Image (cartoon, rainbow, N blue to C red; front, side, top):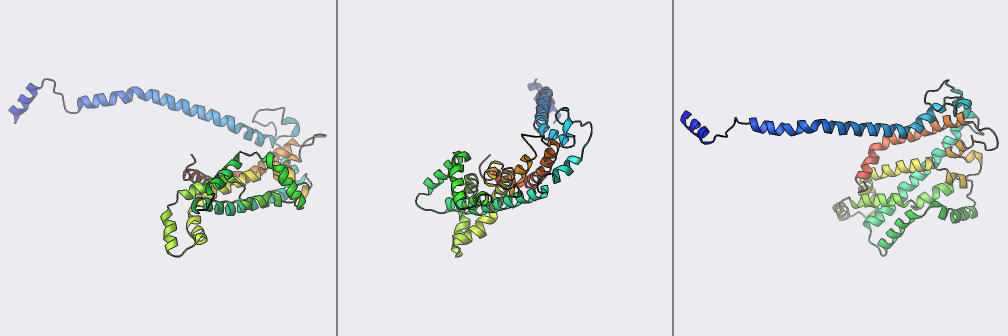
Length: 310
């Protein structure tokens, strides 16, 4: 065995120790490029941190301004208040015609009605577009998508005339009723894309068991639509909680005001404006939005990931 090993070594003069050359050539390149990769990664994180600070600065400034007296809000642009004034929260809660909790309740009722309407109407409409076969389905779906390009200012005048003739102005019905008619085409399209991703074999199995379209929808499709329903709930909550234009058009009595209109009441164009109280109540109004987004974030991401919209 020793003679054979010596003969093979002599025949191949370039023989090397097993594994030595491979290990040297394999580790040289990663070591050479490692500092460059770390530099790029560090630069990327620094840029993202600076961008986050820029985006969150207005929110931090509003929170700090809610703790300052009115005469120091615009004189001190820094985020370190000279003196803390918690009276802004007390004054903002009681300075309007109604306690601020009254406007929070109004916004909550409005949001709940809009959320329920969108969940019921948009899900049923989406099932019809995704599963039912009827004449003109593609044309109706295209017309529905075209409504996404219409600004609200185009339809607000005819809508106001209709609701004014029915005597619904100064009520929340003009803001809630359209949601039960599946007027938000974005959510319909979102749910249609989600339902199309559900295998049709489930529908066929339910139909063999004697289920009709309503039983298939409520017992098969609807339980699987949780991510899309959660996405619709979160977006509807955020849009209607912050809706100022629609509430300004249809709500005229102060007792029916929602949170955005109540915050506008702190500003007086002819007299002095209570900026501290307005910023304080703005912070309070952001708490429900923060909680909804915090607990529904995972459903929101899952809903977009499973509907083909990335």
